[in-house]
Image (cartoon, rainbow, N blue to C red; front, side):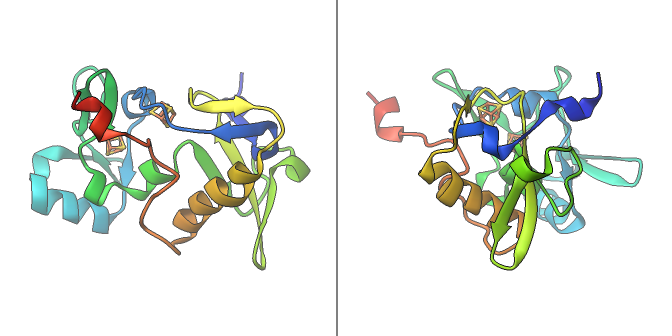
Length: 169
Ligand code: SF4
Ligand code: SF4
């Protein structure tokens, strides 16, 4: 099976909400750009990173998990929130300028003048399949796209929504 089979066009997704299962932070190597790498090195040392094949990565533990992943009351959280790499912020969405993974009309998304193609990695457990809700297509996806295009940095809807007061009970 081609790895492209993993990508589903956004119009098949009703909604997405990260349930902090941590799977994505265990299954993938995170590629960082030089600026992100430098910030991590300044704050955590070069040991928190890795390099190979002309790319810079976040270090993974022997079980494959990212060194910044931690478990709190059964939820997997990111210890790098303040400088979380763009690749992690955009996950599980794939925002591209051409319909690289097929289904062009189902993947098309108009953002201003831009015609983009949006897919989602089906291995994420936070996906609900069906007709996109208004909130998903107009707010959640928009935030992912703005992060991907570099128009915004802060995340509101594109990360796990953790209610810390409930954890303190
Ligand atoms: S983005 Fe998806 S795979 Fe990653 S922690 Fe959230 S629900 Fe799990
Ligand atoms: S930096 Fe954070 S979000 Fe990215 S893989 Fe590591 S724990 Fe997950």
